[in-house]
Image: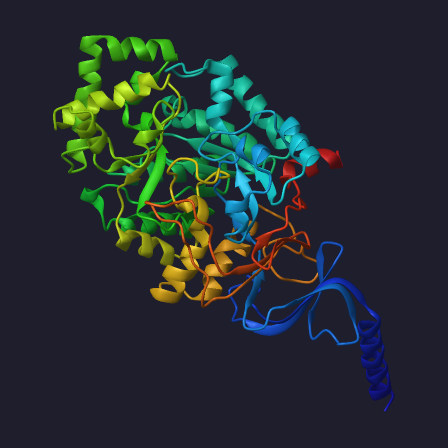
Length: 534
């Protein structure tokens, strides 16, 4: 009887507390997909002071400053995009509309080896101006090497290695979540494995992750994966393989083997995961077609090589050999996204530009055109879209449980250029095409890959789940209508189906419209906390 009385008292007390509770915002009647991968369930979600404080049935007598009726909609954690490039673009467009309309509430930048090296200053500027999404950053190996060695095509001296390690350490102390490499880009492509291992060891000491755009994603992808795993093993650091793919017709279907390499590493006890964008085309610079050695040292020396007949012939020969190796006769797979020198070429392939200019319809002439375009652009980055992958491999990689979803995009300038559609529609495309239409993965698993898995990977404390005490980064969407509208032909189109997006409890998308509020936070890696504790 005594036990019954105590229990009844507790129930009445809790009910009275809930009845008297005042919340900032309550989401009612939604189907909660909490980010764990478990089945959705009906519940109300109450928020206060930027956090989730109650999940269940909120009494009608409770009060809230704002009420969202999520009837017939899904309520999920905000998506974490683990691979973005927002340096510069986020400062110019702090509303980050293309990400928020796609359900993304947290951005991980500094990928592919390119980042700000003065992270403290960068973070302070973002806090000062205010941003709509949360952001965290890796420290980029290419940027570090460029600062110490410029574009030198050689190994670092002992002093230079020490200087690079000091820069990585400083960045980790300032809050970097890890280190990233871009091993197909200059100057990162000039580095050897031991250099990277020693830098990764520094990041590991501060609880960081190693994210890598590997040395090769085509016919030498197996060797590139093995190098990445070797770095994980020797540096004792968790590894994230960026935009995991199989590029090039000769190896389409090879994704089973590449996934097998990752699985074997995990069975060994190495913490290796991957991310992908759900498209069969990649996007990077036109300069990536040029042999790495030809881009070394300085822009002026690159131009000397382009203009010297003997060296130019060598560059052209290697470009054509690479083309043949990938079972292609022309550069028609390479489409201009943004050409600074002549924006009328945006959206055209190298082959079509070559024809438009009345040049001979030969691959050798197209190779020369690539060099000409780079020179005429004043060595500025020319953004491209490359159609090199198969749908079968994209779906196969998506089925792998340790695959996260990422856009590999920056903050888009609406209606400028012909960017890859992944900058607008990555997450919506997964939910529409690969969950609803193709049923490649179930909804709950897709949400897990966009939320708790990336939050776990990058140690984003108290994020990635709808859970009491966690940050109120939340999306409300209609699973039946959510979809990507951006295409290769018309890429500037926001995703549809997201009615509400909340960042730290504040609606940034409300009834499908951007509120222009800036509640985003800079999320610091564990290295900053380690320094603060000393």
